[in-house]
Length: 349
Image 1 (tube, rainbow, N blue to C red):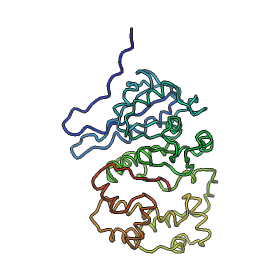
Image 2: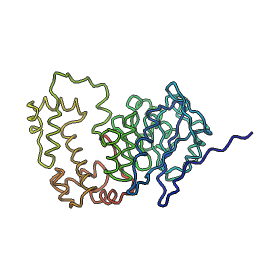
Image 3: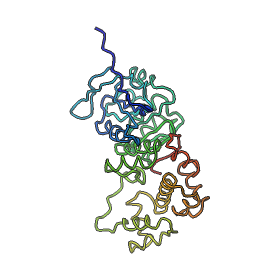
Image 4: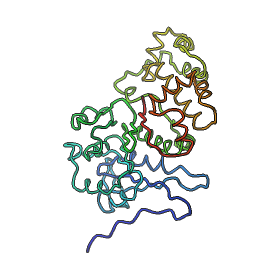
């Protein structure tokens, strides 16, 4: 008997625009934790009427059935590759099962056939080594990409035309988004919610997941760094003080004084703990403050620049352009409208 056709992804029949459909591609060797991240993040957001903003389905490259994981259990996937053809966003989590994709950078026939079902213009994202699938499909040629720091060198050797960044937590290159390992997949999915619906919605999701809505620093802070001596003083108080005085001019000496350290010692300890210099950290915090004010208030650009500590609108414009690739006015227009315009954002920088 011919195999039964795959069930179609569920459709919300209530009036109004249909939810944004996210298809998660479960590959053999999938890591259950990473496979579940999109469901946890995208399953939470609701509109003002309580209607889900997203619809998440998990699919396989084969007809519905069991998919092996890297744990001591398999998962039962209810949808076949046809679900990819109905998706607005496709997410490819990591797999620990090595094969042609990971060893040679070549797609298997069934994986190539499945990816061919994705409609042009669909947003595609990867978590950790899921980036190998995107790269093997030729989607990342000549573009930047992130993956787990431990895989970055080999990935670069296998795909020399791709600009791999081993430091960042994730990279948003418009219609293609890639992230580093495990928890960076949460950062990436929260970023997509924020890009789609703004800070308030993404923060609500993060709060319920008990994770930070935005993490500072990149993978470098986790790579081969010695654990700071617990007998040494922390720089936590200085950071808390800086956040409370972000609208004021802050000198390195001011932050060091909060910990009663010399500037040299403070700078070294700060970098050990935060993975970046105090100056880089301050700039990130001011960019985040500016983003929040642009999204949630009607303050003028000059007022936002003052309250976020940039001083002048020109200074803020330069920093937002460098960090986000857009002007303050364009950023506000995008997120106040709740739109999904493609910003060139590099997370973790």
